[in-house]
Length: 218
Image (cartoon, rainbow, N blue to C red; front, side, top):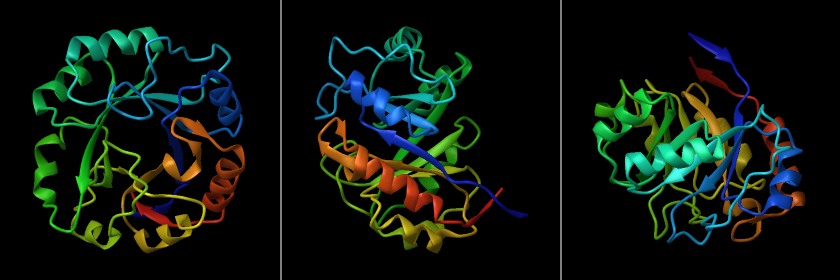
């Protein structure tokens, strides 16, 4: 059954307290914080999430091949609601995190040769998939992959779409009508510099998403 749903927005790669406050004012659905030390958007050792950040915004922690214990510890420290697994994490780790009460987003890096059968073991465990462009970095590569390959996905698990999104190309998501697209994940496309978002670009992105109405599979 198809039904019109609002596409959610996630802004990822946040770390500056004042910038987080400013971006949160756009009434977004998710903010993402990268806990991978080798990322140019790593939150750093002294990171804090502003206390006044609205409770309505879900907090996503992005991890790459981190231990389960450390992920759970940081989830408690920072009040994370979702864990985004952006490395080669095994199914057993996703299950352990899910059992701990966290929502799990499993990332798959996509190129034209990607085989969607690789997602199947995670279907009973995760809440969402995130499809991103295969590139140098674990996210934030500023490159859009060929969305036509998503026609080969069975749409069983709702997904976040990432990879080179910006206000200039987000209207193209109409080509994904009827798919189980849950949210758009933007990072470098709204930045002034790594880890710091342009309020003008965020506003333009939000406005562009608001003008894009598509039906997704539910």
